[in-house]
Length: 138
Image (cartoon, rainbow, N blue to C red; front, side):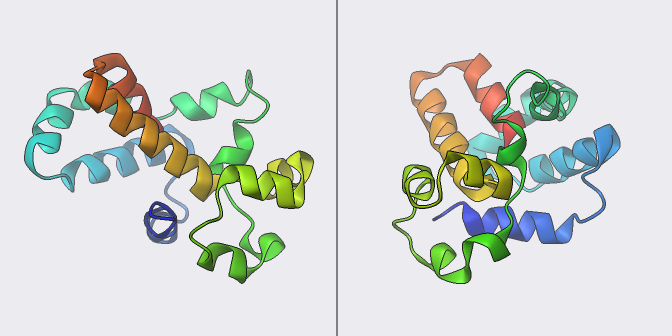
């Protein structure tokens, strides 16, 4: 999984900071500061919108019952070998553990990878609204 290592490195460096709007805004600003090239130019042009949407995914938890599980993962419940297998995707995870268990134990890295793929597709389509949505979700 290409996103999982990024997910865990961000999570481990921001423990305690990603709580509430101030933490989400801080993480979003640091992420935008780390970008390079054309991606940085586009994202900085829309920096205020992205920082303003930093909590959007959290606000969706009230309306989308599956949203909460996308924000974390309980690695101990899945076992280390699962994270070492590059073939493990969200569909395989649900097939192996069941939908209820995956919602309970979290799908963070797999959900981040899906969002990243959607972001790439939005760039290919030049769909600014989708680019901002998926960028802020990541």
